[in-house]
Length: 249
Image 1: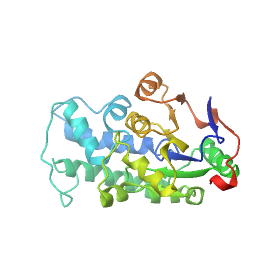
Image 2: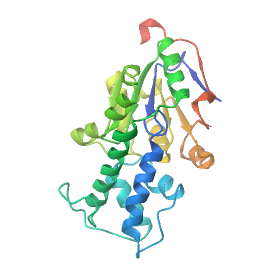
Image 3: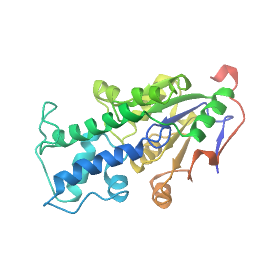
Image 4: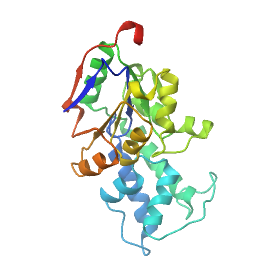
Protein backbone atom coordinates (compact mmCIF):
# COMPACT_ATOMS: atom_id res chain seq x y z
CA UNK A 1 0.00 0.00 0.00
CA UNK A 2 1.26 3.46 -0.92
CA UNK A 3 0.30 6.25 1.46
CA UNK A 4 0.30 9.90 0.43
CA UNK A 5 0.59 11.71 3.78
CA UNK A 6 -0.49 15.28 3.14
CA UNK A 7 0.84 16.44 6.49
CA UNK A 8 4.26 16.16 4.79
CA UNK A 9 3.48 16.38 1.07
CA UNK A 10 2.00 19.34 -0.78
CA UNK A 11 1.89 18.03 -4.35
CA UNK A 12 2.01 14.82 -6.39
CA UNK A 13 3.50 14.68 -9.90
CA UNK A 14 2.45 11.81 -12.16
CA UNK A 15 4.12 10.32 -15.20
CA UNK A 16 1.63 10.07 -18.07
CA UNK A 17 1.88 6.83 -20.06
CA UNK A 18 1.11 3.79 -17.94
CA UNK A 19 0.30 5.87 -14.85
CA UNK A 20 -2.39 8.36 -15.86
CA UNK A 21 -3.40 6.91 -19.23
CA UNK A 22 -3.35 3.40 -20.64
CA UNK A 23 -1.07 4.45 -23.48
CA UNK A 24 2.16 2.64 -22.58
CA UNK A 25 0.87 -0.41 -24.46
CA UNK A 26 0.26 1.79 -27.54
CA UNK A 27 3.82 3.07 -27.38
CA UNK A 28 5.14 -0.49 -26.96
CA UNK A 29 3.16 -1.82 -29.93
CA UNK A 30 4.34 1.04 -32.16
CA UNK A 31 7.97 0.44 -31.16
CA UNK A 32 7.67 -3.27 -31.89
CA UNK A 33 6.23 -2.64 -35.34
CA UNK A 34 9.03 -0.22 -36.26
CA UNK A 35 11.92 -2.14 -34.73
CA UNK A 36 10.81 -5.51 -36.10
CA UNK A 37 10.69 -4.11 -39.63
CA UNK A 38 14.19 -2.65 -39.22
CA UNK A 39 15.68 -5.72 -37.49
CA UNK A 40 14.48 -8.22 -40.07
CA UNK A 41 17.61 -10.00 -41.31
CA UNK A 42 19.77 -8.15 -38.77
CA UNK A 43 18.78 -9.39 -35.32
CA UNK A 44 16.05 -11.08 -33.29
CA UNK A 45 12.69 -9.27 -33.09
CA UNK A 46 11.96 -6.62 -30.48
CA UNK A 47 10.71 -8.44 -27.40
CA UNK A 48 7.69 -7.34 -25.40
CA UNK A 49 7.74 -6.52 -22.61
CA UNK A 50 11.42 -7.00 -21.78
CA UNK A 51 13.06 -4.85 -24.49
CA UNK A 52 10.46 -2.13 -24.08
CA UNK A 53 10.87 -1.94 -20.30
CA UNK A 54 14.67 -2.16 -20.34
CA UNK A 55 15.58 0.18 -23.18
CA UNK A 56 12.67 2.38 -24.27
CA UNK A 57 10.08 2.96 -21.54
CA UNK A 58 10.34 6.38 -19.91
CA UNK A 59 13.03 7.72 -22.26
CA UNK A 60 12.73 10.45 -24.89
CA UNK A 61 11.98 8.88 -28.26
CA UNK A 62 15.41 9.29 -29.85
CA UNK A 63 17.15 8.11 -26.68
CA UNK A 64 14.98 4.99 -26.85
CA UNK A 65 16.13 4.30 -30.40
CA UNK A 66 19.79 4.75 -29.46
CA UNK A 67 19.59 2.71 -26.26
CA UNK A 68 17.75 -0.23 -27.78
CA UNK A 69 19.94 -0.43 -30.89
CA UNK A 70 23.07 -0.25 -28.71
CA UNK A 71 21.78 -3.30 -26.81
CA UNK A 72 21.89 -5.19 -30.12
CA UNK A 73 25.31 -3.82 -31.08
CA UNK A 74 23.80 -1.68 -33.86
CA UNK A 75 24.67 1.95 -34.53
CA UNK A 76 22.96 4.19 -37.05
CA UNK A 77 23.61 7.71 -38.32
CA UNK A 78 21.59 10.30 -36.44
CA UNK A 79 19.89 11.74 -39.51
CA UNK A 80 17.56 14.65 -38.88
CA UNK A 81 13.94 15.67 -38.35
CA UNK A 82 13.37 15.85 -42.12
CA UNK A 83 14.22 12.16 -42.63
CA UNK A 84 11.62 9.89 -44.19
CA UNK A 85 9.80 7.93 -41.45
CA UNK A 86 11.36 4.49 -41.31
CA UNK A 87 14.67 5.59 -42.87
CA UNK A 88 17.66 3.71 -41.39
CA UNK A 89 18.63 6.58 -39.10
CA UNK A 90 17.91 7.37 -35.47
CA UNK A 91 15.48 10.10 -36.50
CA UNK A 92 13.93 7.96 -39.23
CA UNK A 93 13.00 5.15 -36.85
CA UNK A 94 11.80 7.63 -34.26
CA UNK A 95 9.59 9.40 -36.77
CA UNK A 96 8.06 6.11 -37.92
CA UNK A 97 7.19 5.20 -34.34
CA UNK A 98 5.74 8.66 -33.70
CA UNK A 99 3.50 8.44 -36.77
CA UNK A 100 2.13 5.05 -35.71
CA UNK A 101 1.49 6.24 -32.17
CA UNK A 102 -0.33 9.39 -33.29
CA UNK A 103 -2.41 7.39 -35.74
CA UNK A 104 -3.57 5.04 -32.98
CA UNK A 105 -4.35 7.85 -30.53
CA UNK A 106 -6.26 9.77 -33.22
CA UNK A 107 -8.29 6.64 -33.95
CA UNK A 108 -9.02 5.43 -30.44
CA UNK A 109 -8.22 8.26 -28.03
CA UNK A 110 -6.46 7.81 -24.70
CA UNK A 111 -8.18 5.90 -21.92
CA UNK A 112 -7.40 6.97 -18.34
CA UNK A 113 -6.90 4.51 -15.51
CA UNK A 114 -9.96 4.83 -13.29
CA UNK A 115 -7.92 4.28 -10.12
CA UNK A 116 -5.61 7.17 -11.04
CA UNK A 117 -8.57 9.46 -11.74
CA UNK A 118 -10.06 8.55 -8.35
CA UNK A 119 -6.72 9.28 -6.64
CA UNK A 120 -6.41 12.64 -8.41
CA UNK A 121 -9.86 13.69 -7.23
CA UNK A 122 -9.10 12.64 -3.65
CA UNK A 123 -5.75 14.42 -3.59
CA UNK A 124 -7.24 17.64 -4.90
CA UNK A 125 -10.20 17.39 -2.52
CA UNK A 126 -7.68 17.43 0.31
CA UNK A 127 -5.85 20.50 -1.00
CA UNK A 128 -2.96 18.70 -2.70
CA UNK A 129 -1.66 20.19 -5.95
CA UNK A 130 -0.98 17.88 -8.90
CA UNK A 131 1.23 17.81 -11.97
CA UNK A 132 1.77 15.54 -14.97
CA UNK A 133 4.95 15.01 -16.95
CA UNK A 134 6.09 13.08 -20.01
CA UNK A 135 9.05 12.98 -22.35
CA UNK A 136 6.48 12.77 -25.17
CA UNK A 137 5.60 15.86 -27.18
CA UNK A 138 2.03 14.52 -27.27
CA UNK A 139 1.44 14.68 -23.52
CA UNK A 140 -1.03 17.56 -23.61
CA UNK A 141 -3.04 15.99 -26.43
CA UNK A 142 -3.10 12.64 -24.63
CA UNK A 143 -4.21 14.11 -21.31
CA UNK A 144 -6.82 16.25 -23.08
CA UNK A 145 -8.10 13.22 -24.99
CA UNK A 146 -8.55 11.45 -21.66
CA UNK A 147 -10.51 14.45 -20.35
CA UNK A 148 -8.12 15.10 -17.47
CA UNK A 149 -6.41 18.45 -18.14
CA UNK A 150 -8.50 20.16 -15.47
CA UNK A 151 -7.06 17.84 -12.80
CA UNK A 152 -3.48 19.11 -13.14
CA UNK A 153 -1.97 22.38 -12.02
CA UNK A 154 1.13 21.98 -14.22
CA UNK A 155 2.10 19.94 -17.27
CA UNK A 156 5.69 19.49 -18.49
CA UNK A 157 6.32 17.51 -21.66
CA UNK A 158 8.73 16.83 -24.50
CA UNK A 159 8.05 20.23 -26.04
CA UNK A 160 9.21 21.90 -22.82
CA UNK A 161 12.25 19.63 -22.71
CA UNK A 162 13.26 20.71 -26.20
CA UNK A 163 12.63 24.41 -25.53
CA UNK A 164 14.51 24.40 -22.22
CA UNK A 165 17.23 21.95 -23.25
CA UNK A 166 16.35 19.50 -20.48
CA UNK A 167 17.97 16.05 -20.53
CA UNK A 168 15.74 12.98 -20.41
CA UNK A 169 15.23 10.55 -17.55
CA UNK A 170 16.95 9.21 -15.48
CA UNK A 171 18.08 12.82 -15.11
CA UNK A 172 15.52 14.45 -12.77
CA UNK A 173 15.25 17.70 -14.75
CA UNK A 174 11.73 16.97 -16.07
CA UNK A 175 10.37 16.48 -12.55
CA UNK A 176 12.38 19.37 -11.15
CA UNK A 177 10.86 21.67 -13.78
CA UNK A 178 7.41 20.59 -12.59
CA UNK A 179 8.50 21.36 -9.01
CA UNK A 180 9.74 24.80 -10.13
CA UNK A 181 6.38 25.57 -11.74
CA UNK A 182 4.56 24.39 -8.63
CA UNK A 183 6.88 26.68 -6.61
CA UNK A 184 7.59 23.85 -4.18
CA UNK A 185 10.75 22.09 -2.99
CA UNK A 186 11.22 18.54 -4.27
CA UNK A 187 11.04 17.26 -0.70
CA UNK A 188 7.38 18.35 -0.52
CA UNK A 189 6.41 16.48 -3.70
CA UNK A 190 5.64 12.81 -4.38
CA UNK A 191 6.47 11.25 -7.75
CA UNK A 192 4.44 8.44 -9.34
CA UNK A 193 6.25 6.52 -12.10
CA UNK A 194 6.01 3.21 -13.96
CA UNK A 195 9.41 3.21 -15.70
CA UNK A 196 12.82 2.47 -14.19
CA UNK A 197 14.46 5.66 -15.57
CA UNK A 198 11.64 7.69 -14.03
CA UNK A 199 11.95 5.98 -10.67
CA UNK A 200 15.68 6.71 -10.67
CA UNK A 201 14.97 10.32 -11.65
CA UNK A 202 12.60 10.69 -8.71
CA UNK A 203 15.20 9.45 -6.29
CA UNK A 204 18.03 11.51 -7.80
CA UNK A 205 15.86 14.63 -7.62
CA UNK A 206 15.40 14.30 -3.87
CA UNK A 207 11.61 14.02 -3.98
CA UNK A 208 9.74 13.35 -0.77
CA UNK A 209 8.15 10.08 -1.92
CA UNK A 210 8.71 7.92 -4.99
CA UNK A 211 5.83 5.57 -5.79
CA UNK A 212 6.41 3.01 -8.56
CA UNK A 213 3.58 1.34 -10.47
CA UNK A 214 4.44 -2.15 -11.71
CA UNK A 215 1.46 -3.23 -13.78
CA UNK A 216 3.42 -6.07 -15.41
CA UNK A 217 4.34 -7.55 -12.00
CA UNK A 218 7.92 -8.05 -13.24
CA UNK A 219 9.89 -5.03 -12.02
CA UNK A 220 9.23 -4.62 -8.31
CA UNK A 221 12.73 -5.61 -7.19
CA UNK A 222 14.39 -3.46 -9.86
CA UNK A 223 12.17 -0.49 -8.99
CA UNK A 224 13.05 -0.72 -5.31
CA UNK A 225 16.72 -0.97 -6.23
CA UNK A 226 16.35 2.12 -8.45
CA UNK A 227 15.02 4.12 -5.51
CA UNK A 228 11.27 3.56 -5.21
CA UNK A 229 9.93 3.91 -1.67
CA UNK A 230 7.01 1.62 -2.46
CA UNK A 231 5.81 -0.43 -5.45
CA UNK A 232 2.13 -1.04 -6.24
CA UNK A 233 0.40 -2.96 -9.01
CA UNK A 234 -2.19 -0.20 -9.44
CA UNK A 235 -3.03 3.09 -7.77
CA UNK A 236 -6.12 1.44 -6.31
CA UNK A 237 -3.49 0.29 -3.80
CA UNK A 238 -2.92 3.86 -2.61
CA UNK A 239 -4.28 5.76 0.35
CA UNK A 240 -4.40 9.48 1.13
CA UNK A 241 -4.15 10.75 4.69
CA UNK A 242 -4.23 14.24 6.13
CA UNK A 243 -4.94 17.49 4.34
CA UNK A 244 -2.73 20.27 3.00
CA UNK A 245 -3.44 23.39 5.09
CA UNK A 246 -4.77 26.30 3.06
CA UNK A 247 -1.73 28.45 3.80
CA UNK A 248 0.70 25.83 2.47
CA UNK A 249 -0.89 25.13 -0.94
